Every structure is written in C-alpha cells, then in structure tokens.
Image (cartoon, rainbow, N blue to C red):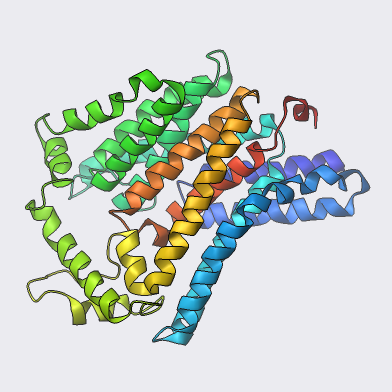
Length: 394
C-alpha cells in the first residue's frame, strides 16, 4: 500500500512536469492529484517519516524573500484604487505553494533526475508541435500549445537553460545527459524561432552564468553568439537589432509604455495604482501617438513601479535578490553532491538569470505558465539543496 501511494503521487508529479510547458490546466490538475495522494500518505504508518518534512525545512532560507513578496502584494492591494479588484488578484500568490510542494515530493537525486527529464520531455513535445504548426502562423513565430509565442519563449528559455546545465554538470553515460543532449538543440532552435528578443537576451544571460560556473575561460562564448545574431541575414538579425536599436519600429510602442509607466509612478510613487486597472490607466497616461491598448507595460520593473510603486520595486529586489544569494550559496555548499544535484542547482541559477533579464523586457511575472515553471524550478533547487547520494535508497 505504501509503495503504491508513493508511486501514484510521483506519477502525477511527473505528469505535472511534462505538462508544465504544454497545458496549464493539465499541469495544475496533475499537481493537485499529486498533492492529494501525497497527503493521503500520511494516513499510512510507513509513510509518516521525518524525511517527508525535510522539504519544508529546506524552504527556511527562502522564507524572508517569499514573505516579502507576499507582503508587497498585500500592501499594494490594500492601498489600490480598486481595492476589491486588487484583493481578488491576490489569488495569484497561490502559485508560491509550488515551491514547498515540489521540495517535499522530490526527496532524492533519482527523483530529481526523473522530474528534470519529464520537464525536458514536455519541452520537446511543445517544440515539435511548434515546428509542425509554424507554417500556419501568420506572424511566422513559433508557438507551442499555450497559443502565444511570448509565453512559449518564456517556457523554452527556462527549459533550454536547465538542459544546458545538465549537459555541463552530468556524466555523459547518464540517461539524463543523453536526454538533454537530444532536448537542448530542439529547445534552442524552437526558442530561436519564436523571435522573442527578451527571451534571447535572457538565454545569453543564463548561458553566461553556466559558462562562468563551469567553463570560466570560455565565458565570452554566449556574448559572441549574441554578436553573431546581429550579423546573420534575415529575421534573426532584425530581431537581434531591435534589442538595442531604440529607433527600430518594434520599439516604438514599448517606449511609449515605459514612458507611461514612468508618469504613473510619478503620480503614485509609494504603492502604485494597484493590481488591476492598468489598461484604463495606460489610456489616460500614454503618449497621444501610441496605438496599442496595453494591459501591461512589457517590463517587470516598469510594471511593478506603476502598479505597486516603490513597495513593489523594493519587494522585487528583496525577493529575487534573496533567492539568488541562496541559490549561489547552495551551489557552492554542494561541491561534492551528486552530479544531478549540482546540475539542477546550476540550471536554476541560469533560469534565475534568464528569467530576471527577460523580465526587463517582458511582464513575465504575469504569465501564469511561465511563473509556475519558474517557481517549480525554485522548488527543485530547494529539494536539491539538502540532497545526498544515500537518499537514493529511499
């Protein structure tokens, strides 16, 4: 009975990992079922073991950063122009529960390897779907099952970086290394074909973090790749150029959004306008020459400044800065940990870099699929931070 319960909840956890980049509905259902069977396990004497709570203890270093994030949302909602609407948006904080849930369910290096593999499999599936449907896309940009190329890019960015870290850290004979060897080229090409510059820049940042950690003498290679993207002919060069050329047509509306965000922040500097109402507020503050009707401001710091004011900006620095400090410390302390543990921690550091840098150009904190995958990665890093080789027997 105990083994059946363990196998059942882990099966649904793997399903959650596979569907994380395919369907938010299926992934949330799978996570709910995994949690349900994991909780049922407490009714069985054989499963009432102290190690089942190690994931909670591992979350302790993240308590201050995560509570700071929750507190910022509460303050912004309370002082919002539309308090009731903003309070309703607080439900989005529930995604933070993914961190302790994943940390408690993934207790061994073997389970960690299976979950990482499931994430890569899901990424391959959504990439192949994107390749097949690309000829039918009017905008010529690869899109996965999530039906929006920016969301697809945000997912592929994280999976590409984790896969690359696995290649950098694991022995070539391991099954996970071989899977990553297959997945990374597929994911990287799919990411390239989304033509999403923010995700591309995030990929350069994440790859640079991996090279600094594993191949410090070659840290410049990702930068060279970025430079090459600016000289190759076709849409790749055009997209790459738009990342730095402020006069590029693709930047016109973005600059209008950033300027409007600055104006909103000037008038609401402490707690912003709240968690709702950005569409209407943008119409009131945008430049008369602006054409787009933005529901967000396409930049995490700009959108936070406008919606949550200084409280949001400070919370962003405290939360994500605290997470980075913890990740780097965990990686350094696990110098002699199993390769999959080192690979996971390195991969999540790269994901952090890619996610934060991408967020400078996209409102990825508001994308449920992307942010769910990000917190899942943090949960995996939390589990990995306390793992030892001997745990594989559990």
